[in-house]
Length: 249
Length: 299
Picture 1 (cartoon, each protein chain N blue to C red):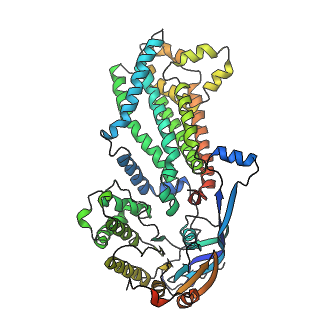
Picture 2: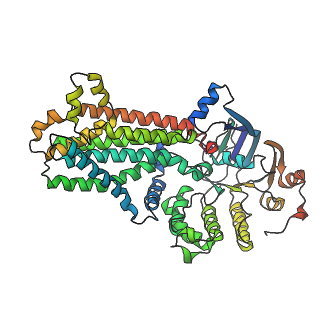
Picture 3: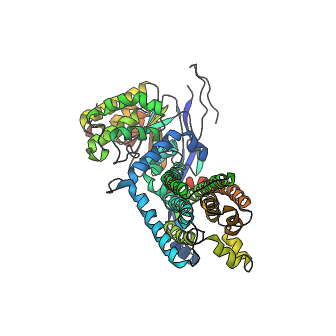
């Protein structure tokens, strides 16, 4: 097996500008006020994933998990170090971002599929499976703004999990939807994993991580404090497995 | 980083790449199916929910046209032959350009939910907005051609060439401006005000409402720098070329009108504007790529 993802000494900091308009910019510059503040979201992170590996990324809110995912998906670029990936990337990150409320469900499937990188032929081929998974054939031709939030999420999810890819990223998304649908998603994620996709799974749920991932990584305030097996990562985090309500499986 | 290439599957391994790499306008072309859907979405959505829908994008220019037509008719003492075509051939250019300017500038910020979350070529948005603006020109061309036929338009080879060059100029400059301003707009939200100023200026600095001959008479021999400054605007050259294409061939004596109503070396100037426009697109693309890396965190 070869590497699928290499994260090599990656650092990412954010600059918060103190100006939104040119006027403020000029005023701040003239008064020699600092033009911006920076904070480090990720500090010198390195790890490698082999093809077929799945890694659980854990940590408190604000520890840099989502930033790490954005660097792997290529939405952001690191300030230092580099990220390398092999093959197409897809994922459950902010599903529904490309949906437009004024378009019908059918049009949104095509638009969102194309946004996620599918070709027309690919969407044609997957169309029935997507509709089937979302359980909403009846509403395909009505505008998405008439959908309930649950229906919306199901459709968005369904398009995302049907994208052809080698690397699949998941960002804390299983918190939404009703029980049967969550179960279905989890099942689909296990399928994708069993088909040999490399996965990066951001989650607060130790249980899900243990179930899906063979490896684990813990972030604390932008630093990687642990990287090893999923079990050890959960142990390191000190989460109580028993406390969690049983919302999947 | 050494790569492990021992792999027992038959398919050759894809190379490892930086997922955040940018391919610029070429990537937009590679994903033209997405571009097509984005353009279609924009066309569907822009006027949805309004009473007369898409008609709004023609009501506004129609009102503007009538204002120009009647007020200029009052002001200009020497009646301008076929002034409807004169105004309209210029208005098509100006309408596209102002449309491209405002829609293009907003294009990236408007799609921030996508820009922040999904990795796709961001040039997609300014390019799609330019295509939507270009699409809105089609019915205007149809109206103009009807007007041309009614007034005895006899196009020569020069007219066709001029019409094509006018289009090439506004498309390249429009794309360049949309790329540049859409990227700058992410960092400075003042852009909206800047383009309002530009819009006011361009309405009056092209020979659309008034004929070019007024500028030529006033400045060509006395204040040559003003004259050349006037002709240094790509939009002005595009309007003049469009006048050459649609208005001049509809006149009673086009041959006599040519040297009087148009500047010398119009085609050379047009060609120069196309070349400069392409260079401008290249520069804008470079700036866009430089700034693009920070779009996701700025929005």
